[in-house]
Length: 310
Image 1: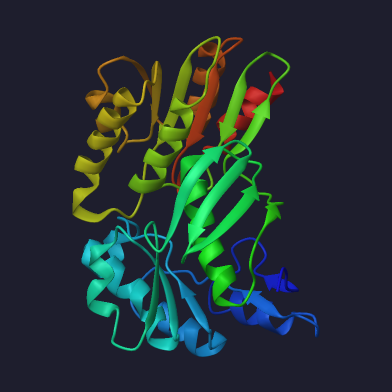
Image 2 (image 1 turned 180 degrees about the horizontal axis):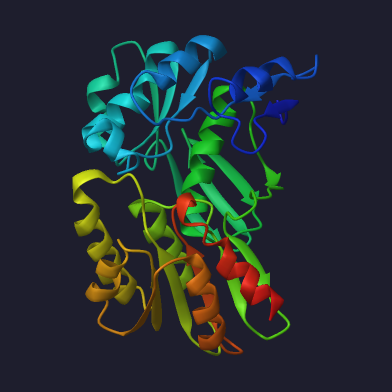
């Protein structure tokens, strides 16, 4: 079938209160429910899956998120793989070897990146090879990480009997890659809903594709809950920012001092979001593209709001 009537979580209603509420509020004619399940420790996804009783399980990535709570990258995989015990069909990234021990016999495994793969992207047109079928879509974004998410979405659609085609209408949540073109001539990419090493790199990759008449500026705040590797991860981020062509790095928060120290180019530091807001307003100029990103606890939307006010 070409489409189905769907229902999904609002905002981040992905815990033991939000997910049941989402299910109970679904319209009677709902055909497919898309339910996000939050992971902040062991046992949480198992509990949510027992409530939802899903038919298809999608794991979008395995990265150093909430490592402080699960101990390691292997712990992240173990916690997320709790979902796979409850489904007959698993959609997983092809580049996540940490999941292999949990892909049990009899589980129908679809790997996006190999079984479902990108063939061509000529914006807005996307050509995807999905389990030997050709899928042709038009999308309103160019970010590489969103294209990867699109592969997972196509696999999920096929798993519930939908063959996607044509235009994809999608809007991203507040503070998730919002692009703001200001009257001052500055472009702000407001991506400060949350951050981890994987999403930071994806955002920097996207910034690298921008073609400003001015500079590429990255305002990067602390990444939280990374556990014992937090210092190394922040330094690695500074190195990655340099390799991504960032012209000016503004580091916000105590952990991000390491990010600035590892960045060989022009940099500045701010103790918190409020200080960063004043600092960044004094640094940017017409033609600059400014990425703003940090973990939710840093509250870095203050910077984007300050720039919007002029």
